[in-house]
Image (cartoon, rainbow, N blue to C red; front, side):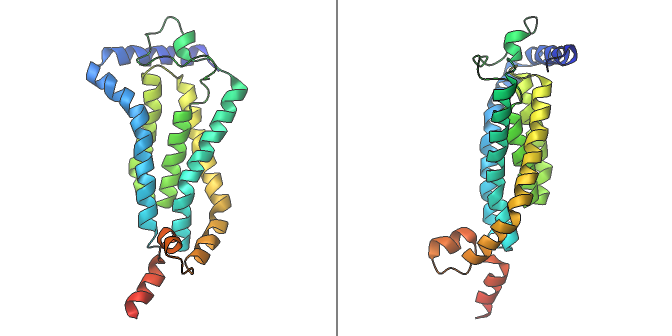
Length: 211
């Protein structure tokens, strides 16, 4: 997977990383992890806003983080098959990575961070279409940051993004109807915590106001 072209691009990006101000390098280091936390916060917001909508809306919002987890699991499974060493260890003529190089056994292809970002961006977009204007750039920046700090090849993050996105779409398409039926049933429950989690739905909320 580590062709001369992707090695050359890796060298160019890490050289560029070392030419940037220290504060920018630190920001890139932080973003590789902070992005995960921000996606987590957006999952909560998407679920909360979907509670007042249809059963399908709440179903997709709840499936979104599960689809992201599935993207991670598939990515990790590929890692154990490919066993690609990290570029910070194999591209000896490249600039040093900005963060410690992961140990051997923590393989490079595909990037788990990019897979999670790709899955989260698309899953959130399916649950909340307008948020794609935020989540897609977030995912792209998160993937790029993994090359920028020196721990992944460009092809690791590109494949990771696509893999995560595809897994998220398939996961939600397959489970959307069963989840929708489940939430429709949950909304008829008289158990407070169940109704709180599933939400009253727009129709049920309107019915309450008319009483």
